[in-house]
Length: 236
Image (cartoon, rainbow, N blue to C red):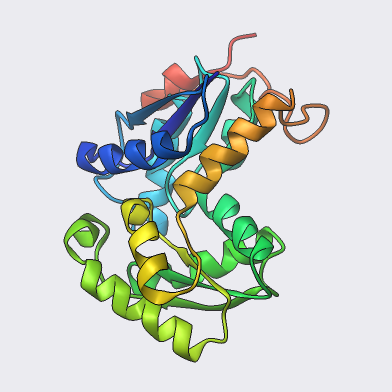
């Protein structure tokens, strides 16, 4: 079984963090291959960044049994499901569902305040808004997450004391390597979406399941594409 974990930004150092988190939970017989997007922004911290990251994500949806989209905005998730022959899971989707298994409510601890609304949008989309107690921002840019463990831990501690939550969801793929340490420090389950999504994809493949393709997630209709997007044209 091959699971491709796609980092939608172009920062290879973050891909290395993501790959370790995915490989740490993959079962025997599962190969994890993490890839860095070949086009798009260095980090994803706005709707603009997210929109321009999607072509790079879609360019990687081939050659594997299943896929993880390793950005907390889950960019391109629906489009990837139209293309993929195996299951595709986003890390926000997986982390929120995992948190709902562990208690009555969770808090998301994310990067910048401007991304809080997107996290709430996804909680609503995934049916998790009633479980989400709060979305907190550390005001740490994505590319500084690796050196900002103290700030992230502080926000997680505040969530544990103030929010009435039973679990904490880390709202950035770059935080993947912090989950175990923060769980031990804070005393609540702290969930990394990369690990959660990897295991979810692995389970779906093991069960022989993939995205249903009779309706909305049927393959895209062939039509001309022009300009820089011409390589994405679906042939007739």
